[in-house]
Structure formats: structure tokens, C-alpha cells
Image (cartoon, rainbow, N blue to C red; front, top):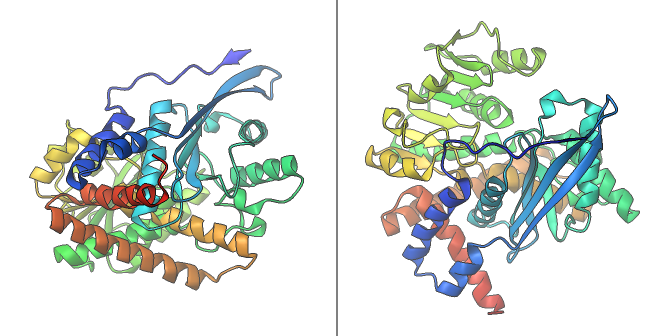
Length: 425
């Protein structure tokens, strides 16, 4: 029997401490009282389970599964499940808190949750992943529920895993429970527009910020780190609106073409090439994947992992605008450097909230038993993203703070107000 050891400690900021440093600054601006401050900084629930799984070779491996519910004062907790070798409790705690703030920023009646399993899905067969997913669903059957905690896809998971989760929970309850997860296949109650929703929200945020900064979207140069659903759809939609995508990257490296890269060609190549850009001839491969971050472009969209912009490389950023497609791509210690350089940042809890917005629409459709058209989904999502951007932008001006701190101020104020009205202290 093998046990998957905890992820090694990386030479980077603790993600929960990084989140808390921003929370603390926003709380001071709001004059948040100590009681509410202490409640909001502490997760409501942390669940850790051991998942023994029979592998294809007959051996048994024990995986660690985590689910953190940060807060549910505004509604059921909501957040994705990631499968990755570097999953840690502190990372999941930070991501769960970010979900609380993200839902509040876009005024969706959810709290924040997040889950993860420490594993390498690329090294596992479909059968092994299914057994692991179903074991996790069974272990969390008293946590997950359409009125309590609603998972969704994240790094290393997608529609397939959500279908297995929904099925396993439904079996345990003896009734099909479509609303227990979002990001499902359409035939199982998924929503039109969900696949590209996060990338679409990044596009709306980018165009909104460009307008404020007087950057003409037409022929604006954009580099995108990460070419999964978020990065690729954000790039495609911005290209369709006249922008020039000059650099993209994935796990195989970064690719650059000063004349612009065709997103349709890049996405088609990726889909036909085992999900990677290795060998793509529409751009030149850069010496280092990190060099994409330092290009002289109008917009940088980090849409890959946490902590890619740090105190060690932030001074090299040349972009006028950073729009965070990933969760936590900029460390707290890099914020001051970025701000001093005069670079505008549309923070993750606003920029990538398109995904949870359409997840909310999916949940609503499941509850109503009525499907919306793609156009209706997109129009409503765009409206929410644009209005949320405007609120955060005006808050930044009001308090003379960055858009990141402004987004936290907006979110924390809503959650704190809910506690005020509900009482209980």
C-alpha cells in the first residue's frame, strides 16, 4: 500500500497568509469590528479524508482529499475541486476564502468553498480517476449538497469528474440531484456557455479596464500565460474583438509571434496534440516560459497557476494592464512593486468571476428545471461582470486604493453586512 506524501513546501508565499494580508488591509479601510474580523478570517469547516484506491496494477494507494468551507452566510458554499500533486490545506483554505470574496464581489448568493485531492491525474488511467472521484464523493456526501456546498471543476478536473460526482451523490440519496455540482455535461443539466464562462469574464474585465485606461482594444498587444479553458477562451474572444495575441504558453513552454497568433489555429492544434502546444508552428518557442511575463505588451493575462508574479520578478513586468485569469497569480509581496510601477491590476476575485457566475446560472436552471439559451447566459453574465467592474473601479477611486484592495472592500462589506442583519454574535 502506497501513500501519497504531502506536497513539498515551495519557495513561495503561503497562499493563505497572502490572502489574509489583503483581507487585513481592506478590513482596516472598512473599520471592521474585531468580532466580524475574527469570524471572516477563519474557515467555517475543514474536512480531510483518506481515500484508499485500488490501482490498475492491483496495488492500493491512499490519497488525501480536502474540502474547506470558508463561509456560507450569503448562501451555500461554492468552489471547485482540483486534482494536483501540490494540493495543500493552506492552498485550499486560501482558495475557499477567495471564493467567498469572489461571489460577494459579483453579488451572487453563495459563500466560499474549495476542495482538492493530492494526486497526479496525468499519470492515472480514466478508471483510477473515476474510482478516486467516487470515493471522494462518498466521503463528502454529508458535506456536498445543492443547499449546502456545491463543487465545480478546477485544475485537473472537468465535466467528466463532475458527472461522476453528481452520479455518486445521487446514488447515495436515491434521487437524481443535478444541482449538487456545476460544470456538468449539458445532457446532465450543465449550462450553455459554462465552458467558456471564465474566459469570457476575463474578456469583459479586460475590455472594461482598457476603456478606463484609454487603451484601444484594436491591435492592442496581449500575452496570455496558460492555455487551458480560461486562457484560450479569453484570448480567442479578445482576438475576435480586434486585439493581437502575441504570446501564449502552456506546460510545454511559451510561444511568441509579434505579428499575432491565430487563436483558432492554436486551439485546434492543442486539441489535436494531446492537449499541448508542443511543436506548434504558428509561433516561435521562447527560451523560457517565464519570459512571456516580461514582454512589452499592453495587457498581460496570467491564467495558469498561483504566485507566478512575485517580489523577485515583478519589477520586470512591462505590461500596462494585468488581468488575473488564474487564482492568486500575483503574490502579496509583489503587489507593492506592481502598484509603484503604475500598472493597473484587475484582481482574480473580479476578473475570473465569470465562471462562478455561470455556475450560479447552471444551479438556478437545475432548480427551475428550465434551460436558458446561450445568448441569455452570455448577456446576463456580461452585464454582471461589467457592473461589478464598475463598482470595484469606483470603490478604488473612493478609497484611493488598488483595484485588488477595492474588490476586497466591496466583498468584505457585503459579507459583514449579512452578519450584521442576521445577528448571532
